[in-house]
Image 1 (spheres, rainbow, N blue to C red):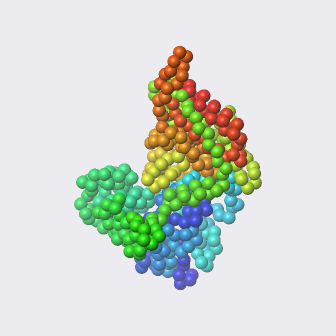
Image 2 (image 1 turned 180 degrees about the horizontal axis):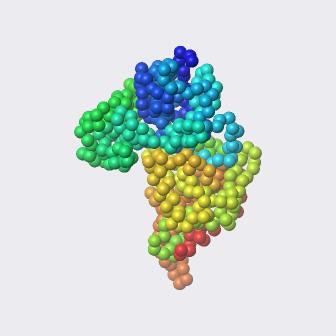
Image 3 (image 1 turned 135 degrees about the horizontal axis):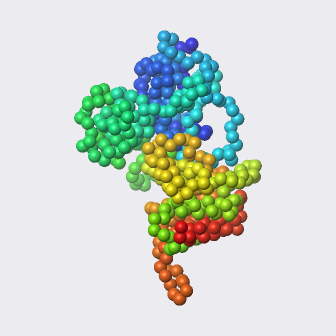
Length: 458
């Protein structure tokens, strides 16, 4: 065994080029054991804990919280301890590597995407020594990610990241989860009402691991006024031509927003988009109709009428894949950026099933517990931005999907009827489609079928 080992940041999901450091659980000079939490990293889909690949002394760490580390770059260096457990060279962790990757057109990337599977590689070892970050494998069994006690506080990685953003000291939060785990709700309640916080030091030595982060943003600091790590470095940043006045300084995009920017740029460069707009008259709706559930049902009906809109398209090979099922990607807006979880088998769900599935997906997005597999593979997308504001839009089609439906804010308008005019409630609709894969007639017939279904009372 060599004097030192270098651990490179593995691919945390579907070819993502980098990830952001959220929190180190060790510092240089510490001794860490095999598979103990090393660092939590934020990817496009989740905050995951990266376990230590060796037992030994930590010689060097890649950077501070908030810094972006490129995939394949040095994450940490260790001096292995021969007296502590080590993973044997070539040891099978139960995770297969080296299998051919599926073609790009076989899996729809979400606007915020990351997978759980990773590859750990050392300078002098083979590339395929494998782990599953946040879900360590032993033999053929994958253990579900669990809350880990760091500094005396048990919490999931996403909870620690949220606490850092809100300026909440986890050691002062009263845990409500099983076995004394601090939950996401605990952190948000503490941020909203700081009188709920326990006295300092109430959790013994808890919070010691957060010291490096506290230097960048103290717990008492107003998160809305906190300077970014780049600004806090004190280095002058020129944001405008000389002589021009400017406020603020550049803030690097991280995690979900960083990947969203890449995906949107790639989609803009690859797709030939065309948008159709129209209104759906919903005056006949009986009370109690769930707008989003009705939109999902209408999309399913329209996909059955025009299968060309429920498809994937490979622009390189010029091939089209029509899907017999309908998996709807539901755009979910968060402070961290855009998530698009997949509502699976929407064509088999009734209104209640759609609502229950949507509530589950939204809750998992909010607490960052949604599995990576739920953020890809949808066949068509829906953006219900009208719950906030806006009438029509030009939503972005993300390959390999060929279409996306957007619903604007419902309004009342004067509608001609036999013998005069009536005030009817309507929902403005926008459908963007990739004109390489769909014709204008197909898109128009799809929109017509959607409007007709939404016009029904039930």
